Image (cartoon, rainbow, N blue to C red):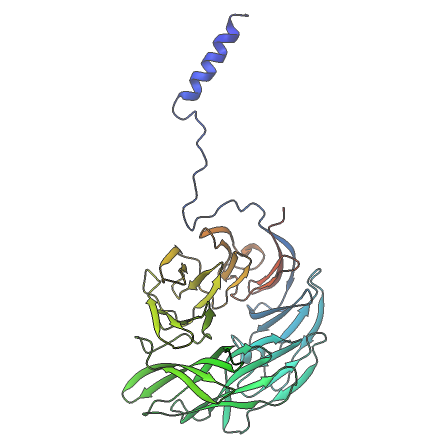
Length: 418
């Protein structure tokens, strides 16, 4: 029996060399494939956001003192806004207004901003500011004439919130205006910029960003997105405006080849401007408006009109309308990595170099490597097959939490619990 022991060891060793008996090494994930995602997300709590069987759309979320403010909308009377305890999910307050007939009237707004402990809610006829501590209305404001209405897109810079005002009565508008709110000294809107119709093009001015120049003047950047109805033709101008001196610094006329554009405010980074047309990303010199490069980042040449773009980890991240996610080199416009089939979101949120995209699935992406960390699918068992993650999420950086909704439930997820 003693002689069998060495023989058994030899046979065991030889068997390891036979095909099918070796342990395959773990393959290196290809770009865009999930890496180790074990317990990256941990659901802390979930609460229903509807009391009926209709699917609820939840579009805006804001972190306030560790709590989560969630906007929802569906046809029928509803609490349009609610704040929940970030730790437990317990509801703290509801907000609604009888002038807004139901939640669907503010469904899908980009006009909602939390700034200086005030929450602005944008509506076509009204602008609300509410106290996020208790949900009480602080200010209710209208355009300065009943012949005007607000557009839904809003932007913010320093202590100001900007809205676009157009005349009522049809798409062929004779002018477009930018108005602003001083959030610290809250009062009615004030006129910032008036753009008349030029060469039969109806204007729409929107998407404000800016900086202070070396003299301390406030410089604003925004677009004039125009259309001429006969014959049908678009035109996009990018305007650099010195608010302090009330002068145009430069204007880049008819910038985009497609004559259409994304409505997001331009991104400013390292003395450059990044601006999205309908299918191109443009990089311009901040001070002169001269083009440095333009790129068609999507391999499918998809539209960028509703897309999001943002600087993360020194990369320009672009999510196009055909579900591609790309990282561009901000200096050259070169594509660094590309991940297909991530969904389409007009809001990109990140926690450091981890990017979150919510569109059908909730996806966490390592921006440094261009790899998916986790793809969390909605729990259809307790709802139905139509459930999906809505695009708005909020990241609580201090407590390492992500808040998301899948149409039925508001969820709090802990980030990378280890």
